[in-house]
Length: 247
Length: 205
Image (tube, rainbow over all chains, first blue to last red; front, side, top):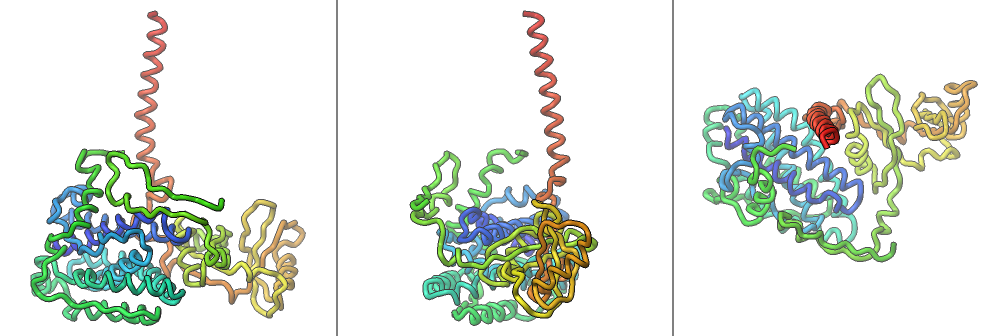
């Protein structure tokens, strides 16, 4: 259970963290404010999930968020991909991740463990805004002009392999399924792929995401790439110097 | 401002690697496409029992973006029950069509436009006249806006989230009042001690 919760929360923490790098740099003012707002939402979601984890492990949200070693973080590496301040890359990343978070939260809302189910339902409402927002952007960039369409397509293609890795399962997920805590049996990949494809088609673009083969090891089991290590060291900068700091 | 260079930030000892990648930008800060976006006016309703008040305006390429931006930019200042977004051009009074018009009044110069109600009218100009009659009466107004009901995009906070469900205290002044108070009291006490010590020294020397 803790692994599952960590995988959701860590995804959100790092997505929010990396997206807040855009503050002040987004292409238009209103998009900047909106994007920062959504990043704040993601971090708030992560925080709420860490609190829930805290009820199981006894740790504080700060300790959980900042105090682990690299292999203890279970986010998929797509969330820490460097976008090199390319807006299309940022949108592509948002697109894949937000839809995944939506589908995941929706299914967790049906879990038999009540605290998780009720939290998921609450977060799902906010997640719905996130996907509306990112769908608008994908549509807009895809239909904008040749330049924006090319860039958006390239960004989607570049992020597709990492998107596959989101579906790697953290250890213990199987057990939750057989024990009946998680109630969905259908393939999450297909459920996720459908709205992705319709949004992309509407934008006049294409997307191709492969399913990963069993045994592929990535972020969800603690195996991370360099981008993640960089993002983690930035996140832990203050905490690692003084875990008790307040301001 | 014709030429504007954005330089990479000064590197401090602890500044992380990620910030080194910010692109150096040269040239105009404005872009013709963005300048061409239409302007939308946004009205917020604090509680269901309040009237909508003008919150400000924003530029956006289309209605769906205007909605999104209005929610994030104006809906997050305080708890918001409902948002209305409308193209500025819809407020021009000589457009004509029989419709229900929403009337917004600016009572005194510098006040924010407040929604007072609606009237049935055949055009913007007609709506304005009817609006004055129905809502102002003898009271003087500084300015009146009317907008056809059909042109308003209404976002209802109950069905489409505006104010979030997660803890939003950090956005509000009251979210900081206890924390700030504690610090201020600690500081104040320290200051009192300092002053006392200062005076003490004066007396001795």
